[in-house]
Length: 99
Image (cartoon, rainbow, N blue to C red; front, side, top):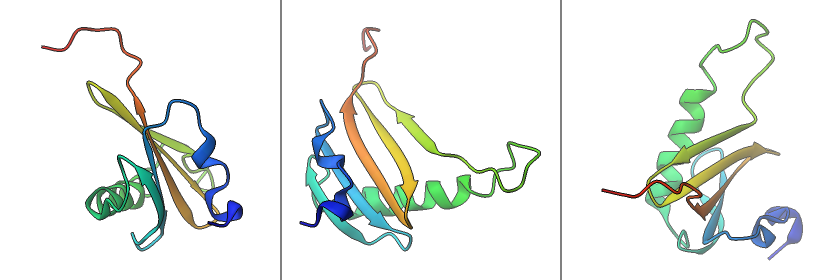
């Protein structure tokens, strides 16, 4: 796999899986718990597209850099760069007990 495609995503500590997705939602690379997870890729692509339209700043050129989706046991960390969506799954760092 080309290191320029992964941009180091495969070397992130504590990650349990990753996805590299194009702007249309196609999986370009994946591993671990997210390997070939096209459903998650599609969902994340939609989240990114919708988030891009949320005006959270008075400067229209300013857009989000990262999105974190936090669940009880894990978090999905999403970054958009070079026309690609990078998703990393990591265990949740929350110490709150789950019910």
